[in-house]
Image 1 (cartoon, one colour):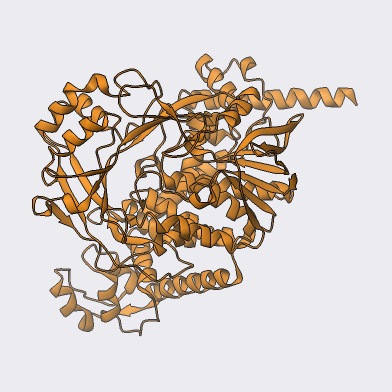
Image 2 (cartoon, rainbow, N blue to C red):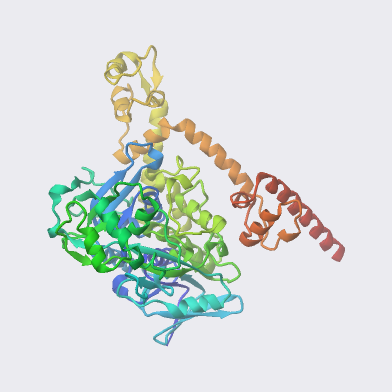
Length: 631
């Protein structure tokens, strides 16, 4: 059987779902092929969306019309805004999800897309014609012809699950077969390949927990949301619980290290530094008296708990022993064993910022295949790859999110420019313009780009226009509304703020750290316009930090100026002797697309950039002279 489509997506995880949906929203015929249609959007590890930086990505995906935000809202059973005690640049929405409902919500959203089809099979071969991908073949004997192919295979590429020191078992995740032939097909194409690992903790029966020995953690009183465009009915909320490991657990782990797949030598792949196993924690931090453990609900219809903080590849009996050393878990019953999984990835320096594979027209990679970890990082890449695959089919200009436009841009640029030597996780510290890219303004930043590309429905575009109009109205009110001393001073005295001696604009008063926007609305002479709490909060942050925001915008403009100095793919970096030997080596490997990208490559100094500009201009001048002589 032969199927034909325009954009083919391999894999139905978080990257695959977003890639397929994005291509379909742009009007392309899209086909998603995955081994099990019932596991589209599966939460293989922690059943949660968001967190610090990650929550901003989830909102950016939603701003671009994506799937994740709406699905997370539909399945949320515990929502918190993290880092509220810190500055707004590092606030992060996080939602615990009902694990069984989340894949169903993703499937429901995908099924709404008119141009998207789903097919259950395992892709085993990628078909090329010269330097262009033209389709795939499946284990079931189906050939799918496509103009663009997006590979989002997650941990399935030659995946092996490890529990204890015995030999690993081939699997993409628990209960599913690995994708061996696809990894081999891509490797035969000459692409560089590497090996990473990640892991999960055991799960336990919540009915066997002594909650009196744990600290209860409730969600926010007002349930937040990720999606701007969809307002889903909310589920009942459940608490999480906090407990701690201690000396007994550390001793159990130390005495069984040789039985760990990681420390016993079964696993060679590099693991995530920022999400270490309990074995890593005990070995790397021997002086730490304890480590925090979160007991997180798996759903409304189960009492099962996810034991966040105890990822492991130790044998099952050792896992049970160390679980029962934790306060509150002395009688705990284990429902699932924790495990480590090792898998292939393709170092992302082989990609462009569109997530297209260099040297192969029509081929895109997104998700853990690029060396990342996390649902949100996968979703962000999936949106970028799906949009660009569709735009390429439609012969339209590519879509790139710049580093000052979104965390998605930081993510992609870090991967392409810096590469990875461990599974990549996004943090606010990776973003130099994080005050511009807050969780509260994601839709204002990226919504207009989504609208202009054609990613939004008419209803979504109308909602966006209303939001932008409301923001403009509230912003203008603060710029022009007057606050009189006689009316304002009693209120200012109540909050410990200096009294006014003459009238001021509302925005000027709001810049005071101790004064809130709601207070200014009450004190101003001019009547306030209608507004939502979300818009008021966003404008308040914008006004309070406008000096810092302006400074970041100036820095961003400087960066964009460098980005306009383009670097051709075929530049002979090895001949550029005004550039250091180390920089020449890095430039040859990465082949940056602009001077700005070259400046972000580790090992390329400011002096190298100056030399690079001189060499590129000389090279272009000589090439122009040669063309003139040929004529």
